[in-house]
Image 1 (cartoon, one colour):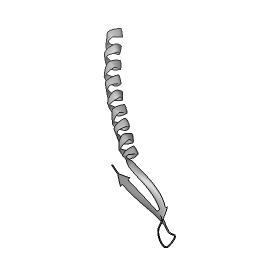
Image 2: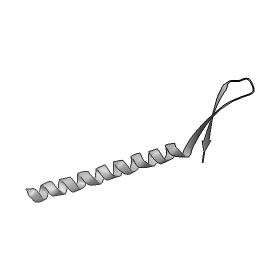
Image 3: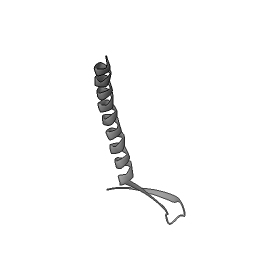
Image 4: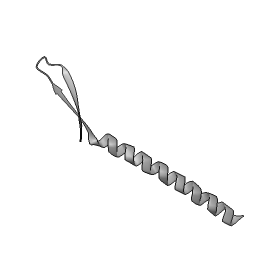
Amino acid sequence: MAVQKMDTGAEGGKERRKKIAQVREANERQRKKHRRMRLDSWGRMVVEVIVG
């Protein structure tokens, strides 16, 4: 019984770890996109998205 619980716990942990890794990757991707706001010659707000 206890061993079975440990097994399911390990599997759940593996899944959770995978999910955490995916979320971390998504966050990294978001961080790589820099948003720079500036004003153009007409005084309008221009949002530049720099990827890299």
